[in-house]
Image 1: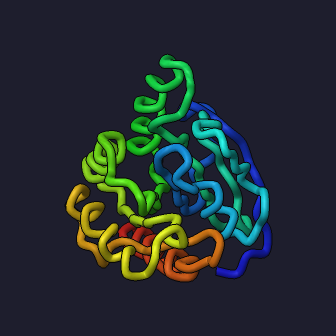
Image 2 (image 1 turned 90 degrees about the horizontal axis):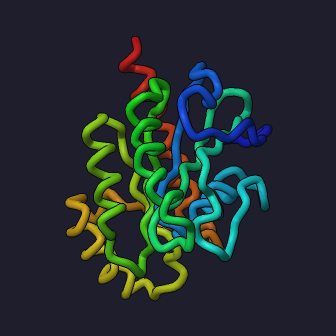
Length: 200
């Protein structure tokens, strides 16, 4: 994917706030501090288009970005151990679930897992929703620079077992080395093509 332009469009919490569904859309989801913002910035070759934070849970809205005037990218709010008010945590489920089941132009969700953590209940709940609403999933394991190459295989096994996905379904990714960037883009492009074929 050649990046000609990438810019923030708007934020929202419900369908009335979403931009028009007039182009293919790819969403990014994962627990707080999994490296979601860093992944999107590496994919778009921008340093700070999506704000990264050392404080988990800063993204509490659904954020929409325009890429080349042709593709919409969506940063979904993180979940998990963030030090946010209980009311905000309770909003996460309905906000994300409504987006997943109502967004007709959604081609796939890139779902991130930290290589050092076994998936938690929220991760599995999100996977269940994606299956329920027939949303293709692109699973990515982040922060692989934090473990050795030998340890990577060991870490992938329990993640695959917990999610019920095959090990080869996961793309290892590092924001530092950019390992996995091209593979993630390839899988996004395949998902967009598949969605286009379904509409024909």
